[in-house]
Image (cartoon, rainbow over all chains, first blue to last red; front, side, top):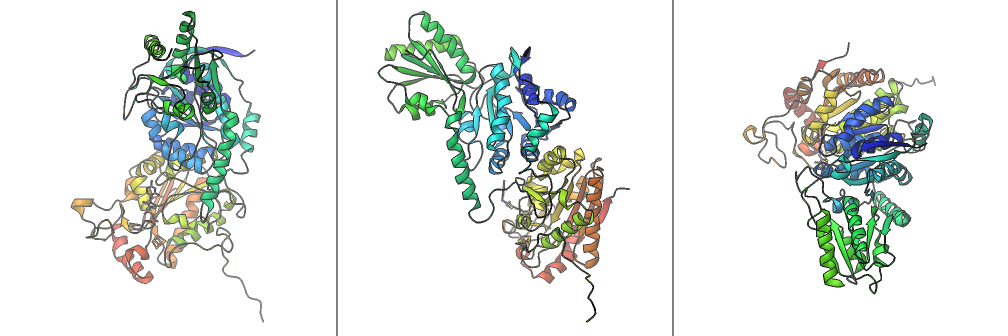
Amino acid sequence: MAERVFMKGCEAIAEAATRAGCRFFAGYPITPQNEIPEYFARRMPEVGGTFVQGESEVASVNMLYGAALTGIRAMSSSSSCGISLYSEGVSYMAAARVPAVYVNVQRGGPGIGAIQPAQQDYNQATKASGNGGFKMIVLAPATVQECVDMVYEAFDLAARDENPVLVLTDGVMGTMMEPVVLPPMKSDEEVAALREAFAHRAVIGHKPLDQHTGEPGGIGDGWEKHNIETAEMYKTWDKDVRVEEFMMDDAEIVLAAYGISARISKVIVKQLRKEGIKAGMIRPITVSPFPYDTFANLDPSKVKGILDVEMSIPAQMRFDIDHAVCGRIPVMECLRSGGQLLTNDQVLAGARELIKEVL
Amino acid sequence: MSEMKKVYERTKGIKPGAVSGFCPGCMHSTVHKLIGEAAENVGALDKLVRVEGVGCCGLGQLYVSGDWLIAAHGRAGAVATGVKRSSPDSLVYTYQGDGDLAAIGLAETLSAANRGENITVIFVNNGIYGMTGGQMAPTTLLGMKATTAPKGRVAEEHGYPMHVCEIINQLTAPKMIVRTTVDTPQNVMKTRKYIEKAFKMQLEGKGYALIEIVTTCPTNWGLGTLESIDFMREHMLKEFPVGEFRMPE
Ligand SMILES: Cc1ncc(C[n+]2csc(CCOP(=O)(O)OP(=O)(O)O)c2C)c(N)n1
Ligand code: SF4
């Protein structure tokens, strides 16, 4: 029987990672994700893993880089202004093709911002998490259960591609408690086998003529070769695109939202349906790769308008929607930011405005 | 003809046929040779992991044996922490210049030392940013010219040269802290012994070692090989005297 427990988002994330075989965590305190490092500090010694409180986010992400290159499943987490400090290490991990997982429990910004939830790191997460134009798979859970499932899976994706994976969540999910079904705990043998699977690249010491390096680039055209290879890998991600289409069969009005905003939007779609309005929702589950096709394939003779719902001012995901829709369908925005939460009333009012404009 | 006895052999710690990219007369190459020899002497070449700083040390990565990875500029202390904690049997050393270790990476340097990470830190102090062309470093001497201190380092504007061993010596956890140099055969052998000792200590799980090696940078000091050694003896070693700050029992 699967275990069903009542857990806080952050703790569920840490437990899911442990069950996925994570045996190294480094992180630095920042609200609203402190429960992740705190959980790891208790949990890692129980499973023979390592927890390190880094002296900064810069140090923590670089510890992650070193640990993951030995082949161990490793993770880190932070929030917004802390994640800015991850750019350096994440770029190095993308450069060295390191399978590592990190979590951004987003809070308000810019700068120190607010400790309350927000979705203001979308562009940073999906377009430029560091220098050099690399890409990552970015998963955006909308429930604590999805936090658990996605963190668990993130390690497999990272291992498959030998590339960092980001789980992009927010302070609502991080601090909220919900019942979750926890995934199975990987056995010590399974954890060892996962590590062994990276042995061909592990930087742990070898015979002098069998030198392993973390560096794919180097002299001459090494880096360009690396970039061509990774670009090819990114193209294979079309199959990894995940999107939830809710009541979209006959929808005339579409709410587009990810993460916590999608939860609120879903409630509003149901309410509008009760009123006889043909509303639907598109929820990107992978925000990178983004479900461009889902938006590009919307039929303008049926879908009259899109409401982009985000906890970010100015809007960020909206530009991915625009890129897919190309002006064929009007797009309006319903936004909050800086730690101010979207409310049902506000999303409903936004939807009504759109309806007034386009229906 | 009587059979000749082999008295010297290139260490397996340097890759066969490899050439370093260092400038002629640069002491980085001596230090690399010593690392290779020390690792071979303690019988741990197959455990060696080099966490490389950013600087001229990058010219040595294809030269020395052992696995390696590049840490972002200054982060070697953190990266080495991740490697060593996840792979305790590896022999992990960082290789860092003064800009890398004492300017951009000071937080990571101090914190790794303060945690007493079981790693070996090789700190090459040439008093200047070599790789980027001679800018001022935390260890640049007063009055010494750098491209970003064209009139020479001035205490009122730039502060004083930073003494890394002395700073680390304030911490309780480190087990070995030494400053050495490689200007004479005696000092070369002494430095190899220090590296060997630090490696042995690490293999026995005994903790953190910092080996600062005062070196020359003929290219950016604008001096010939021999002149730069004279300059180092006369000026660098006055500011940074060699010595054993802390040694394991
Ligand atoms: C984040 C970052 N900033 C700056 C640089 C440019 N950079 C490369 S090497 C170097 C200086 C290295 O000097 P030092 O640590 O003294 O080593 P040396 O070259 O003298 O051996 C700098 C600033 C970089 N690579 N990364
Ligand atoms: S620039 Fe200076 S430190 Fe760098 S290789 Fe040349 S002499 Fe050595």
